[in-house]
Image (cartoon, rainbow, N blue to C red; front, side):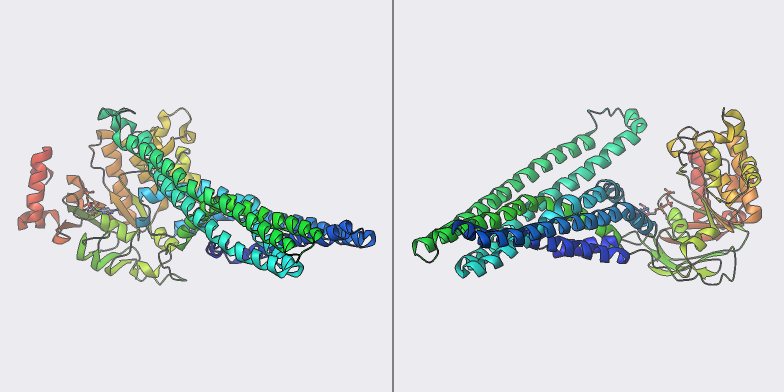
Amino acid sequence: MNLRPMLRDLAAILGHGHRGALRAYLVWAVVYGVLQGVATALAVPLLKSLLSDDTAGALRWLAAMAVAVALTCAAGHTQAMKGFEVALTVLTSTHRRVGDHVGALPVGWFSAERVGRLSRVVTDGTVQVGGLFAHLLTPLVVGLATPATIAVAALLLDWRLGVAMLVCAPLLLVVFGWSARLVGKGDELSDAAAVEAANRVVEFARHQRTLRALGRTARGHRPLDEAIDRQHSAGRRAMWLSVPGVLAGGFATQFAFTVLLLVGVLLALGGDVDPVALVAVLALAARFTGPLAELSALSGAVRMAHNDVRRIAEVLEQEPLPEPETTAELPRPGEVELSGVTFGYGGDPVLRDVSLRVPPRTMTALVGASGSGKTTVTRLIARFWDARAGTVRVGGADVRQQRTEDLMAQIAVVFQDVYLFDDTLEANVRAGRPDATDEQVREAGRLAGVAEIVERLPHGWATRVGEGGAALSGGERQRVSIARAIVKDAPVVLLDEATAALDAENERYVQAAMRTLLERSTVLVIAHRLPTVVAADQIVVLDGCGVAERGTHAELLAANGRYAAFWRERDRARGWRLTSAR
Ligand SMILES: Nc1ncnc2c1ncn2[C@@H]1O[C@H](COP(=O)(O)OP(=O)(O)OP(=O)(O)O)[C@@H](O)[C@H]1O
């Protein structure tokens, strides 16, 4: 059983500042185990003295034993306190370390599967790892240090018995290691199934409206049923996998004890050990195998705990987006530029050799068929991902040469899938700029039409919007999101215009707010509405991984290329009249 990988992962989780505390705890746990072994070994001369009527000698050994026991208690207390300290560090700092780290990871890392695992890691995982020090590591270290000390003492008593113990120990550890691996494998199986089932439950709860509309009730939602079935069968497999290991561990310990007894009895029968020494040998053999039996019982749990430790360490090992120490100069504030950008999410490129420039305080509309890469362009500008080739510049500087907070200070985003925090309306608008004054928040609210929502709500600005903004309509959520962008007052605004038809009131507010944003910022909009496209200083048409056309609305219509065809198609599909907007 190799503890080194787990200790290495634990040290990684704790970080540089706390590794000394882990080392101190381990040293004290070893001292505690050794002292337990010494106190046990002292029973041998004590027994010998007692059985040979040497009272004075017995008293001396008794005193020595008392000292050893007192030292053992002191060491036990110290190691427990040190373990407590490290456990507390794990519990308090791991969340922060994981949180800080995850915050620097590329957005592409956050797949649904990883998000499900992450929530398990930071809730369950950290608690399990914290408990490791109290319930597992100490018995484990003691289970190794005490038998080792006893084996050394046995060597002094009778070398043959000592050698028998030293031969048994590694064999036992091999069996325990095998048993632990089986349990660990079962744990990995059931953990993967549990993460999947948890994700399916969340999906089932979150998307009730869609599922009901599709006629899927709890019974009929096959992915959830299947995930739960898989979790059950993984649990069963994990249990069956652990059975042979647990049996083999117990059997091996009993076998070792029997071997030691046999060696002792054979030595006594051969006249090499007197009966008095034989009693002592038996006592030592019992104390040798006792902690090992405990080790056998713990080995599976230790492996499972190591899996938890590994999962946290794995998150911390993920490479964050590389960041410079300081942000480069921004020679052209408000400008956005992609030059020769190629990017794909894994397989084929979604964008190939794309170049476009959005001059400061102008509006560029991105248009193109669904899946042509419009959203991807905005994600690269906000550096949610890094381009495979080419350069993305914001403010005239490569986004990779800017610190995340400096880059994000230049950009406000209004996405379609607006997420509002389960907080008040005011807090949700202020999220754009936490240090905004009340007046600035109110003004942004007025410009984006949030003030009008506020008037209708019983608690005004203090009304809570529910998780994700559930208490507001889609159009209202978008207004809050636009108010956020206005209050942020960033030089660049990335806007994904709503595809869903807005009612006249929402439409009016959104258009008015866009005018406000345009007065102060550079706007790159994924445009779905004709008035937006017509108003743009530049229209960029994405098609087939690249820029197919660019120009103003009139220029592109005159060119009668992709854009003209594209809008004629939309015109037919939605009944829009392209000509009437001119
Ligand atoms: N997170 C992702 N992982 C893998 N592929 C993705 C991811 N996001 C988008 N894609 C793929 O990249 C391509 C471009 O997607 P993108 O969302 O940029 O297009 P879009 O033009 O914005 O589409 P739409 O108008 O439908 O929103 C699509 O083929 C899409 O399936």
